[in-house]
Length: 76
Image (tube, rainbow, N blue to C red; front, side, top):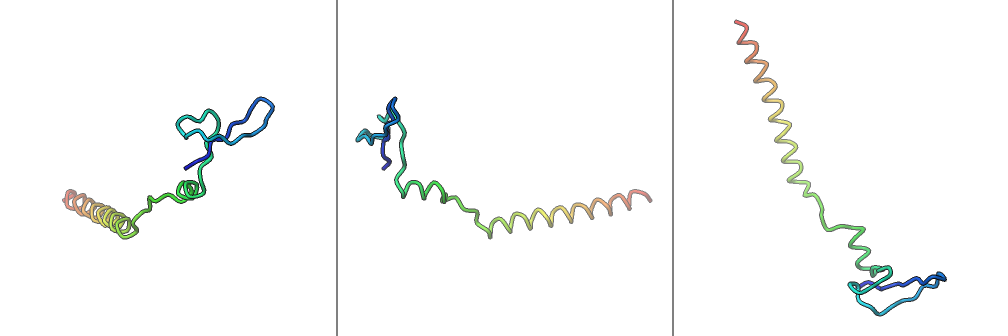
């Protein structure tokens, strides 16, 4: 849980026991919250990524050459 930090008009910083929702100053995250923010849990599954990119590449190449063959046959 984060810490509530209140800075007064003079510039003096005070740590408050207020909850995060009631804090009127700055909320400083705990070390664990900070680490989870810096290293998000959302990671790309490389196996699925490679499958999708490979499928798109194959579809592009097959479509490209199918179009060339259709254009070639359409000339005659």
